[in-house]
Structures are given as structure tokens and as C-alpha cells.
Amino acid sequence: MRCKKERDALKTIKILKPPRVLIVHLKRFGFSSSGSRVKKLDNVKFGSELDITPFVVDAKVAVKYELFGVCVHSGKSAYGGHYYIYVRDQEMKAIVGF
Image (cartoon, rainbow, N blue to C red; front, side, top):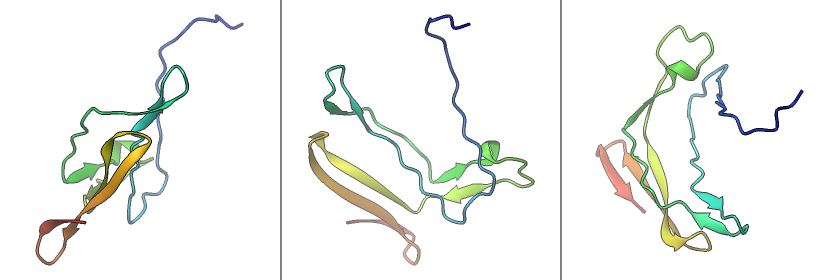
């Protein structure tokens, strides 16, 4: 029987075998009630290390990744703008922008 009411839900993802390199894509565009694309303008804060141990099935050791690069969209709308990247230079231990 279906209650036909809104319910709170929790969506989870579990990783069976963590990859050597992890690429995470944050969906920063959405749709308005009229169906137009809109850009999400709120900031996303993150550190230089990502611990995914809680999301790995039967992890025996900690599963952590070091941030290597970030791709950023610059522009006020979902219909225009530019992409640029910041990449960690392993020799200089610095962040380089392109």
C-alpha cells in the first residue's frame, strides 16, 4: 500500500574496492521549477585530504585520498562562463592555476 505522502529519505553509496585515483564530481547546476538550468551559488569548503573509510565496504584500514586538483566554473549562470583548474605541483608543493 502506498501512502502518497512525502517522506524523508537517505541515499547512500558504498564502495566495494577503492580506486587508486578518486575523482569526485559535485553537481553544481540544477533546474528551476520552470525547467531552466540554474547555477548553485553557495560555496563548497573542503580540506586537502578526504577520508572515505566510512563509505568502503569492510574496510580493514583507513582509506584516504590527498587532494591533487580542483576544476572550477567561473560565471554567474549555467549558460555561460569559463572553467579553470588548480593543480598541486608535486615538486614545488604549491598550487598552480591554469
